[in-house]
Amino acid sequence: MTPAERVLLQNKSWVQEKFALDPGYFQRFAPGQHPQFLWIGCSDSRIPINEITVTSAGELFIHRNIANVIGVDDLNGLSVLQYAIGVLAVQHVIVCGHYGCAGVLAAMRGPATGPLDAWLDNIRAIQAAHREELDAIAEEDQRWDRMVELNVLAQVRQLTQAPPVQAAWASGAGLQLHGWVYRLDDGVLQELVAVSPPALSG
Ligand code: CO
Image 1: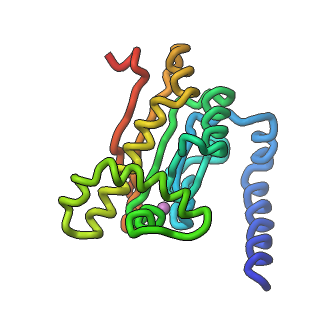
Image 2: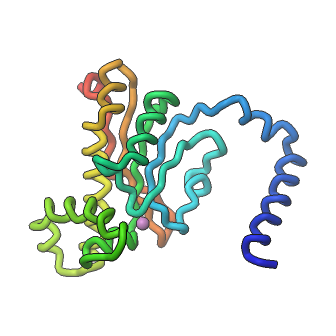
């Protein structure tokens, strides 16, 4: 059996199991989705999002890329943001980074090749803006951890200016932004920042 065949086979047994436990399971999702959350996370294979958050199908609208970035000219990410907020009316946008992010480390270590190099410029710009703080950290692992956090904080800050977020807030929607970080070592999610709509934050 090839690895792909194995995965298809696992899917078959999953379908049978789900159906046996709850015959209406798949039919319930057919009419449409009403997720409360947009999750913007890293593509890293070690972060099974529904599993670590104990959420079900239909709860999270998910966008993933290398190092959980929403670039200002990233049509993919900006379209997800537009649709999730404007159409699905999610109430929470979560940017979730993770310690041990190879994308962040690659950006810190220097040039890469191909399209990845240009993508990592998103991280390098944040690094440059925090050069002084980062240079004061002697240990590379600790500098890496801090850069992971600074990236999440910068993405959330950037989201506050994004047109779909601004429009939602202007219309009185209670949209909240969250910056979280995940630790691969122990599976714990930690909040770094939370941003409420300006009108409601007092
Ligand atoms: Co990563």
